[in-house]
Amino acid sequence: MKRLLWIALAFLPVAGAQNVNDIVRRSVQRDAVNFERFRNYTFQEVTEEIRYDKEGRVSSSKAETVEILMLAGHPYTRLIAREGRPLSEKEERKEQEKLDKELAKRLKNPEKELAEFEKERADDRRFFQEIPEAFDFTLLGQESVDGLPVWKIHAEPKPGYKPRDKRANVFQKVRATLWIDQGEYQWVKAEVEVIETISWGLFVLRIPPGATVTFSQTRVNSEVWLPKQAHIRADARLGLLKTFRMGFDVAYSNYRKFQSESQVVGAEEVQ
Image 1 (cartoon, rainbow, N blue to C red):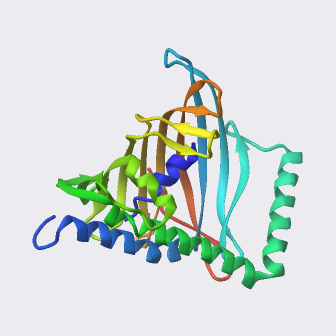
Image 2: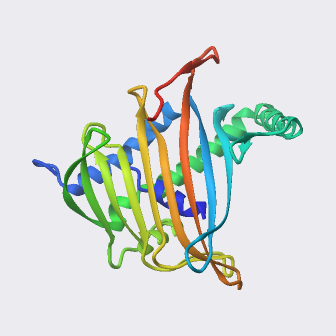
């Protein structure tokens, strides 16, 4: 289900002489600059997975808290709590051992490890860069989100578009509304709706029309945009099993910046 969130994250990024396509194209180009600043930060992610019954009532839920940190130059996710409670000493030792093992692996051949990560980033960039060509955009107006002036833009799949990246086929199956900051051309919020069934694997996972994703981010320390919240709601079919209803609520917090001497300094908190 987090693949739906990944789709929302793909929508990274008028008045006057600027047209809406220029706004979206510039917002996509800004991602590279923002990611370099993102490398200096660590933060926490709390994900609650919710299952619903046929009547739409919550049947079960579980929550995990992880820390997103940079380990030898690229992100690493470390589990730090379950259901809002810190891990037991045994679990904490296990997570520390996993971190130490991964760090040793990355430091053993850092050039290779970093090169592989940068290749993944480059592949993702090629995927993201298809956004301006894959959709028809309509400027809906100008609004204010979290006190920031933004452009509100609707994105509808462009009929007949032939993706260069196979993964970009998914863009033909969603529509979106984007709120893009007028000052830095970063996206403040995105709402994505599945309009055609999305499948991963032949009989692995199918997401039918009607699934929705909302995602927002915030400006931290007046220099970088980091994730703030995400919400996913969908019916899904796993393999040949019956359809189940589920959702994810994700909240990000505790942003901290690492200095070159590896000290952590306080950063702006999301209210």
